[in-house]
Image (cartoon, rainbow, N blue to C red; front, side, top):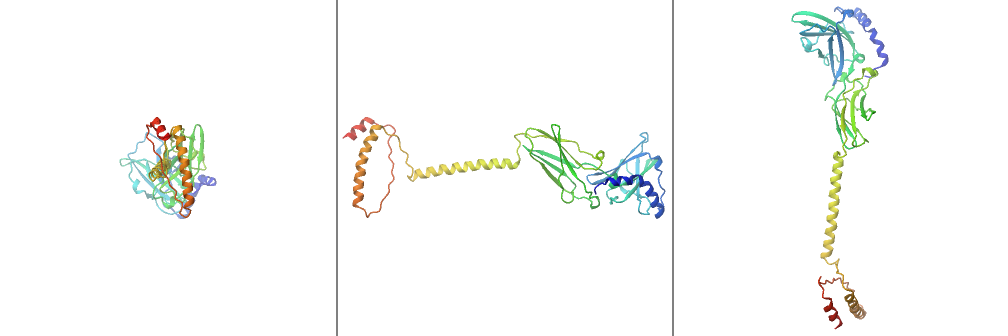
Length: 331
């Protein structure tokens, strides 16, 4: 749910409400002494898991194990022992399966032991929609020539009760310039989500941070920056595919063109002629003129015969004896 600024007014009333509700419903457990707390608590949403952590104010006290209990303000129930934290040596506890409502106020009681001796006990009440801090999600970045793919990793399954209405922020930094992107995540935040930061400058270093937006700027927890240098030689798969396709297209066009020329030459439609000497060209011109006159007269006599078009080529040896050719033509 969205954190409302008005909700912060509730914090000073937590203790008062707890006392009033206890009196109304007749809660049998003793209220903890809030004036002598010896622990610092923190509730955070880590990868959509509700994690309660604590730290002792007096560092000289060394506990061998802890026991965590809780109760709900609005229900007349005794203290409940958190099963996975009934005898834990860790300084945190996963309460996802215990605290399922963001509208309830939870009262915690932590007991510290050294063997069988109780060293301390401390307590605090929590309103999840107020006291919950949101750890940034895991993410990876992949840089290309002019864009970056930001892959945000959410768990495959998210508890329905913990579907906070969160605003995801992807922060882009380069050469002192900071840009914020607020992608729209459709549906539940589950599974991987990919966001593309495009229109970037090649051969430039870019850094990316991912976090959840919060009304209180001081409560925002940003992820460590992940950076990449966009190299001119790095191209996306689509660009590489386009380049390969272009090369194949040019090759096919050239192959078709060469095949067409070879075929036309083979059937005699295209004739390749060598350049002849000037004297031989003049002599041939005179001879072909006489042939043309004869063919014209012949065609006039055979008007009923359909016109036949002939195509032929002259081929001359590369080493031509010009003197002999001139004598033969003059004869």
